[in-house]
Length: 289
Image (cartoon, rainbow, N blue to C red; front, side, top):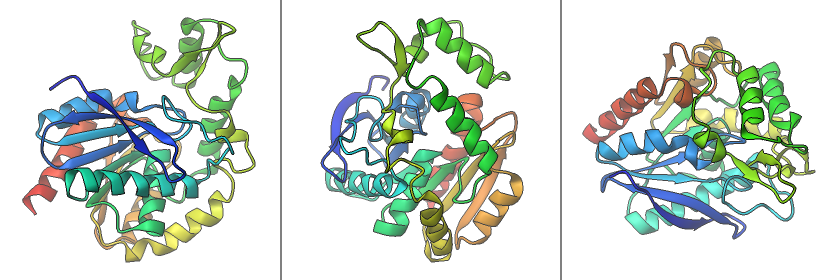
């Protein structure tokens, strides 16, 4: 199957979360994107995993893509963790079993916070280039790029593509801008802006509000997480170094990590074939178990 079925889920505060179902009829795998992205970032991966016989659900997190923005500006990790729990509850009711969650960056921390604060949730967890302890310079660079044109936007798609090329100089600039168009919205003033709520970074309850304290709490809870956890790290990651990855999995009863050569923080976008093979191997192990 290639065409997803669009449907809605509900977040912890009743907010509408846009989702796609790529129905391979098997075990459910939920994909949660990174900050500033949308569920479209997973399209190629979702099709590959669905062809392998999995039921794949991709979700726009609150304030991103086609999902509702939070009127109160509630975008803390605790809010995203509560949404992850709400998503899993609805999918368990619909499909009758615990899903595996694959989360990149913000999506991975959402799943991890949800597992600690509201779990047990998932059957297994794949974290993509994120752990509770991160390089603060890497975090600042990512958020700096996100916030640089947050308000003024871009006059054209080419201008947005140039900005991305400057931020990711090692990634080949795509010939077609159709994929980029999915991550931007065209506002009434004729300018393109990222498909996420600026309050995500600027509200009093932004993603940075209380984050260090909460992630320290999550880190201390790692030895109590019994589910299988796979960390997929980009070897050129600016966010997670190898020692951080090794330390993270050392605290998990059932955790391991792999490095993807030639990939940075955007592992699935940088090396999608390698990334897909890694998670399909992991899912295959879980099915055999």
